[in-house]
Image (cartoon, rainbow, N blue to C red):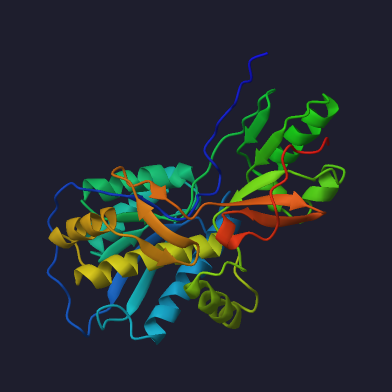
Length: 317
């Protein structure tokens, strides 16, 4: 029997993705040391994606505070200008056109959800702006094969797994985005979790140097430790900061191409590990895989962040 493998893009990005916009544009000259570096962001603070959107907002705010406490970038403070796109793709386009064309922000970074990221990235490209975004989304997928991979929101993932259990479909490997990391997941699928995999771009226990500081200072700022949405936003800030520091500029115009070119040729150390990018701006590295082992979800890959050994094949559910 020939095995079929269904592949899907994960609902949570493996680290920050970078869309490299190369179109030329007009722009302002660099600001003085007294002027802040204004970072424009449109986020879904209301509507369908408001819960993760607010997490991304906290991540950006933590990055700005920690960076400013160290003296800012290029001797200038970071100022965030955040608009609410209401989880609406048309609104996000208008927001980024305003941020870049009217407000003349120095840098733009991305929102949450592919539905919002794609149109936002197109606007950034039209203006020739570097565009770094923290996460994306995907559709459900299933396969009656040796390997089953599904990308979904929580309830869709639970429904799929329950259906596969009822059909007595027993893949050797099963991986799903979002659902396995939810605190209610185990009970929702009858506690038959052993061996189920899930991707993550972040764990609070990751040994990367800047992560220790991030967890400590984020917790002090917000009263609880960061989750993946917050870490993805913070990573986005780290990527932008590394490029700005290396190139020595942060404004519209020719500076944006310099930032893009630098990121194409360099690796950035972040709270999710070292990140680099291919020619299309897709992130390389910083992948982490979690698995339910002994009733707990633990990191099994990569080796330098491993909390438990990978189980394969997956026990029957």
